[in-house]
Image 1 (spheres, rainbow, N blue to C red):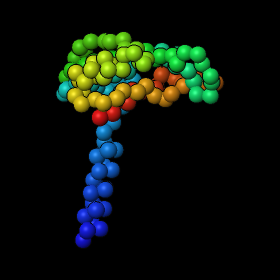
Image 2: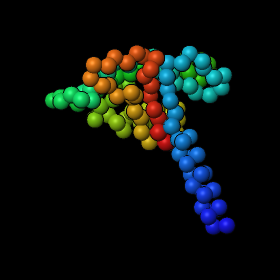
Image 3: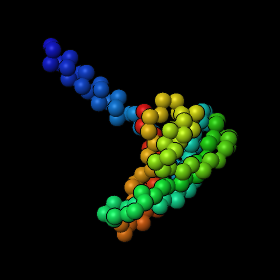
Image 4: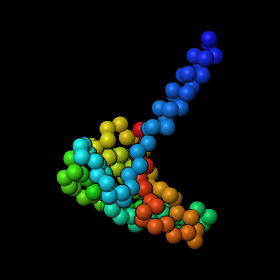
Length: 124
């Protein structure tokens, strides 16, 4: 009985952690109710994997905000080491409890990533 209870707790924990991320993409489908964020553009100057850089770089994104399918605002957000907390605070206005925001995929040397493959990952 203890093993079954332990396995149930582990399964429940894994299923909760799998649901703790939100992906923000360029997807055009906007829900009828509530807030929805949409990725409009990405300008990535981060140091690619496999390359030695003097500067770590940064990535800037333009995010559109909709509420009940109505456009609310468009915001340019720059991700670098200095403004992590400010970015988390901005996303928390729309998705309370955000702990981290990443722009993915991370650049790799010699690989060009199209906008439709890029996304923001909000972690809770």
